[in-house]
Length: 143
Image (tube, rainbow, N blue to C red; front, top):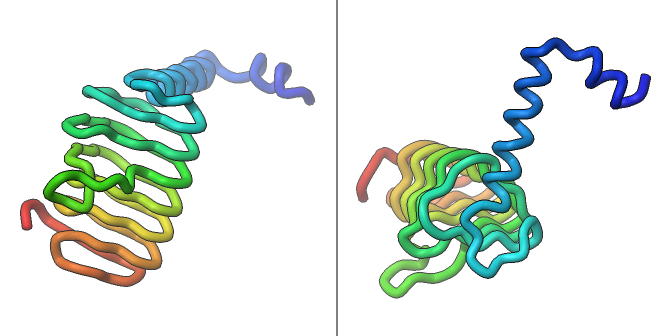
């Protein structure tokens, strides 16, 4: 059975879900980019959401992102007063290197960093307001 036939045999609810997932991915990946080259380099500005997919995802200063972000590197740029760019991320970051100043949600990857974590980090090395931890890291609000 071909993919086209499989999609044709899906229920209306499943088709609607597939369309919604596709739209969320398009909006999350291509929306709110300032000078990036999605999906290779996503340079997010302003307030956006959805499913962001890219090799290198950078969330600019004062940006907010709601949703899921999947990439090899997630924003490890340095800010003026912080080792992290001042941004807010609400959701899940999945990648080899994940970084965000304010994270409400989770980071899953090799190395994770968040200056102000409310949630969990799962990876080889995790850095948050409580310091370094291996495998699992947890944070609850301001440091």
